[in-house]
Length: 281
Image (cartoon, rainbow, N blue to C red; front, side, top):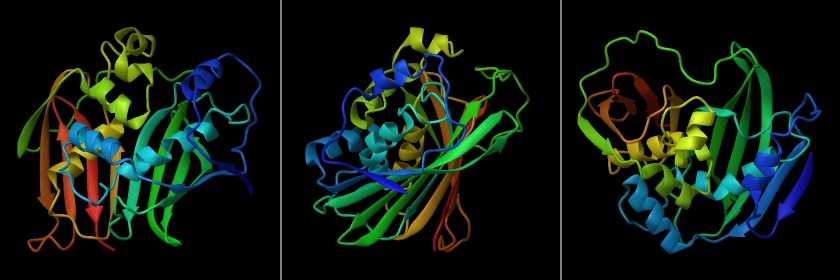
C-alpha cells in the first residue's frame, strides 16, 4: 500500500470535491493508498468550541468523536482524489463505528492514518469503509470506521415517505437550532452545503439543511457522558436526516441493570434519525 504523508491540513478540499462532480471516467476500485499525518497536536481552543457545539463538558480527555474531526481532512484528501471511484459530493454517511481503547488526553500528540477498504454492493448502490486510526506514543488508542453509500443512478436522492414502527418514549427532548449545521461545519471542517445552505440542501432533494450525522452521534454520546466505560465501541446507524431546525427525542437504556453491558440509544421525531449501541470490550 502506498503511503502519502501530510505535514499540515490540506486546504481547498471542498473546491476539489466540487470539481469532482464534473463527469469523468473513474476507476472501479478503491485506491491502495494510506494518508498519514504524524504528531498532530490538539488545539485546545478548537476542542472547546467542538465541545460546546456537541454538548460535551470541557475536560482534558478527548470526546470519542473528536479524533474523527482530526482525521476528516485526511479522509477528504483520499476521497477527493481523481482516482477515487465516486465523487465525494453526493455520497451518504450511513453508519459509523468508533472503538476507544483508552482515554486520549488532549495534551498527547497523535499520529493519524486513513485508508479506504471493503467496497461492496448495496441494494441502493455501493458502499465502502473509510478507516481512521489514531496512535499515541506508538499505541493504537482509537479507530473509526465510517461507512459511505454511493447511490446508483436509479436511487432517489431524497427519502420517500414510509411507515415507521412506534418509537420509544424519549428520556429527553432536544431543540436543534438551524445554526447547528453551520456551527458543526465550522468545528468539523465538513462544509458540505446540504448542512449549511438551503439552496445546497434542495439540490440534493432536502427541503432544508440537515444536521451532520456525526453531530448527532456526538450529541448522543455527550448525553451519556460520565456513564461510559474507559474502553468501549460505539456503533451507530444513520436513519432519516434531521431537517433543521428540529425537535428530536433522545432515549437511552442500559443493556443490563449494572450498566456493564453497555447502552442502547436512539434519536427520533416523527421518524427515526439514529440508532446506536455502546458495547464494552
